[in-house]
Structures are given as structure tokens and as C-alpha cells.
Length: 490
Ligand SMILES: [Zn+2]
Ligand SMILES: [Zn+2]
Image (cartoon, rainbow, N blue to C red; front, side):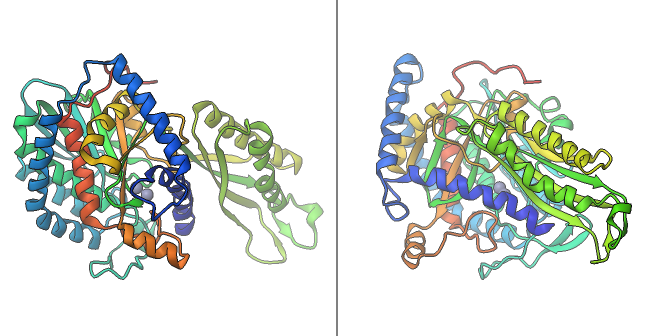
């Protein structure tokens, strides 16, 4: 189960990296020698940006002000980094699973209070909400996720995790293999920077530490616990994820960024009996086995071949001995899409195929239990463009833009819950790997350890500094949606 859980997200993140690595050509010749597609995308992106700048002249960046702000932020990060590094290593060595992030939440609470935030704990379980008012202006939301993964660390880092936690009733090793330790640290860095640089921005900040992103239920839990009603209602928001792109790269993408995800447990019911007398039984194993192959025709025959969609059977459990026909077989299904209509088609098709497989085997209707999921994460296009307009002059080729037409990742993020609750946002990808490390891996023909790998070890300093800088400078640069805050989607 643990391995299954890890592999469905790990595998999908590979595609995310594949799709986004190609973007980082100017600074990542080490990663990809094929710069032609990137040049093409960038030409498209530049044309798109020029178009929107022309149609939105009010969104002009004061370059002198931004250059000065970046210089002050760089100096602040230089001073603060040693203490941020201590926090990062401590978080890395003590990861906690979703809804068990008690220690992490306490550290974040203490640090936000030190920076002058009013902090509320235990929002949606272990969630943390810090609020800072700084005059008139928009309410700006920034989120970091806090949870680790049920897996054993193999990085060999001096600050490796030896922690253990409870996962589905079992004692398991725990590792920060997705970089959420870096996310919590950069949120603390942002709190310090925005508190020290109050003259550069106005409004209200709502900084949150979210539990249980990996199980895709932490964002929902915080919303259900009144995140948008008990605290100032955000006008727009920011978040970011560290990835195996070259360290310091900041990618802002318009439109869909991450896929939807839906997981089900399907139980096929049969009638158990002796292995020598199949006619006296209803054997659920061939029914479930047929389902495993037939469900893929939803992808190959029902879905538009141009559209992205994945159906994965991540678990199959049935039987105990060669001479016993069991009375049930259980499969776990995971579905990914980049579009809500494709999401509906795949979900409906997967359930219909389960029913048909059972009917074909004269079995009763299978029990389908929804395990969890989240919608496609869509960035506000005007915010993504505006963020790039602010960041590109400050970071040069380290700031990259991906237009809406660029395919999103196949991984998923429950940050989509906040967007769909009415918080238009930019979700950045931040590069975390030293280009020299990427180059040496490439030279050896070895793959880069992705998020969810037991060897995942991004360089903390450039990742944390880039994460803090991307969001702090977007806030100071006045990045906001072109349209006023939309109504929440039903
Ligand atoms: Zn993850
Ligand atoms: Zn993650």
C-alpha cells in the first residue's frame, strides 16, 4: 500500500518534470541540449506577454523600485539564511505524516509569531493560519504544505530522517521526499521578509501551513474549518513547489498547472468455494482481472486521443491459497485528467466498466468507494503573466514563463481547492537541483531523483531563496488578477 501510494504520485511527477524541464533552456543546457522547443515556447510566451502588456497598460512595473527591493531582499536573505537553514535541517530530520504535523505546526507558529503575525493553530486538523495587517490593500494568501511521506529516506544526508509515523494503522518510516520541509522554511523566510519590508507593500497577509497535501484532504479540511470565513477573505494567492529543475529557476505558467486526481476502491463480490468446483462459485478474480484490462479501453476508445488522461490500477488484492476461490477481489484505481470534461468521462467510464465486468461474471454489483481526489489546478493567466513580467527583469533566464497551451503536469495538488473556493492564484515551480549535480547525473546516464524518490535531495539554499524571492517580489510588484475575485465555483 505504501509503495502504491508513493508510486502513483512519483510517477506522475516525472511527467511534470519532463514537461517543465524543457522550458528552462537558457540556464539548463546541462539538463537538455534540445533548446529548440524551449526557444519556440519562449517566443510564443514573449508574444503573448507583449500582447497582454499592451492591452493592460496599468500593469506597468516600476523597474527602479523593483531592483532596489530585490537588492534589499537579497541582503536580508543573506543575513537570515543561516537560521533558515537550521530550521530546514530540523524539519527535514523530523518529518510528520498528514494530519500528524504537530511539531512542524508548532515551529511554524513560533516563527510566524516572532515575525509579528497573529497566529491561529489547529485549523482543519493541524493547519496554521498567520495574519498580518499592513494598511489598506488586498488580502493576499500564501500557502505552504507541511506533510512528509510514508517511506524510508536513502539520501545519506547528515540530517536524514529516522522518523516514524502511523500510516493506515501501521508504523512506517517517514521522509520529506516531496520538499514540503523546504516549503515550510520558505514560508518562514517570506514572513520575515514581508515583515521587515512593510514599506514596500500594503494590505493583509494570510500565510498558511496546510496539513495533508499528499493525501489530498488537507486543503478541504482547512476550508471546511472556516479558512475563508474565520479569517480575512483572500483576494488572490500564491504557492510554489520545489522540483528537480535547475536550482533557482522560477516557472510561472498560465492556465492548467497540475492534473485532477480521483482514487477509488472497487470491491468485486463473488461466492467463494473449492478450487476444484468453480461452477459452484462466482469467482471474483477473473472478474477483477478483466476489469484491470478493460478499464484501459476508456482511455484508448472513449477519450479523445488528443486529451491527456491516465487510469492506473495501483493495487489488486484477492485470495489466499491455490485451492480456494475467494469471495471478493479488491482493486484500487487512480484517474488523472487535465480537463474537467475528461475527468468526468474517465470517472464515469471506470465505474461503468466495473459494473459491466461484474455483470459479465454473473456477480452482484461491485462496491465502489471514493478514496479522495482534487480538481485540475488552474493558474490565473493574468497573474501568471504579471508575475513573469515582474520577475523576468530581476532574474533573467532563471525566470521562465509557460503559456496556457503548454501541457500541465500529470501530478496533482490540492491547492486547487483554494482556487476553486475563489482564490485566483499563481502556483510556481521552483528549481531545486544544483546544475552541476544534474550535469554529473546526465554524464553518468543516471536519472535525476524526482519528488517522492527516497534519494530526493534538492539544494536547500537556492531553493529556499528562490521560493521566498518569487513570492515576496510578486507581492511587492503588485501581481494580482486582471479580473476581480470570481465567485467560488460550486
Ligand atoms: Zn508529493
Ligand atoms: Zn508535494
